[in-house]
Figure 1 (tube, rainbow, N blue to C red):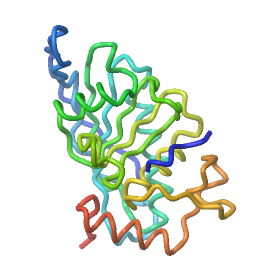
Figure 2 (cartoon, helix red, strand yellow):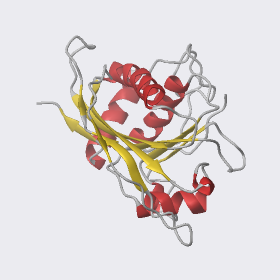
Figure 3 (tube, rainbow, N blue to C red):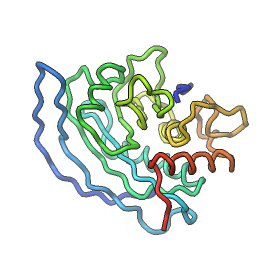
Figure 4 (cartoon, helix red, strand yellow):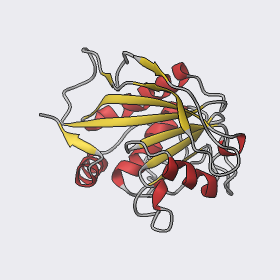
Amino acid sequence: MKTTQHWQFPLTVCLTAMLLLFSTAALPQAAPAKRQAPAAAKKGTAAKATHLLHLTAVRLDGSGWSDERVLEVVRGAGRVIARCGVKLERVELVVLAVPPSYLDLATPVSRELARDYRVARPAVYFVRDTRSSPAFEAESFGRGNTKSRPELADTVWITTTARDPGIALAHELAHVLMDSGAHSEEPGNLMREETTPKNNALTPAQCVRLRDTATGTGLLKKAK
């Protein structure tokens, strides 16, 4: 697949059920159908980390994603990002029930959703499909490309049609953490336009930029 130019870690889960209340007459008034408490990584994960990532995963109820599939994709992305010394330490899974018109990525309604139900960033939205043109299976929004749509800053949106979604998420998340839409021509590099399992490496320079930029923007924290 081609990704946009816009721009780990087994989990222990604890769910808290919440009722949905929204009005179909106005904005979605999205409320969590359920919210999963932050999950800590278990022992035995990759090499010692210098930086920590806390990620919010937002699953839209009715999108076709399951909790299990979301966490599987997040784990896969975390294993790739871990090669830069970044440990995906915590993930909070939020499941939102919204009107059908909000299930697909579309700038106007997605901006409303991100604005009216705020979650900690960086955040990944697991959606049904996209109405954007050109249509990408995964799309990321850093700070440099959201001057006119700040509600979307520091987010990734990934559809059910994404192939190799763990790699796709790692690619888009790297765009967000580096706050850069740049792609690489280097064979096997994660930041090639085509996201495949064979393209999963990051150079030392890319890792430095990822860690330094995301630490500066508060998206990463230094490990103690």
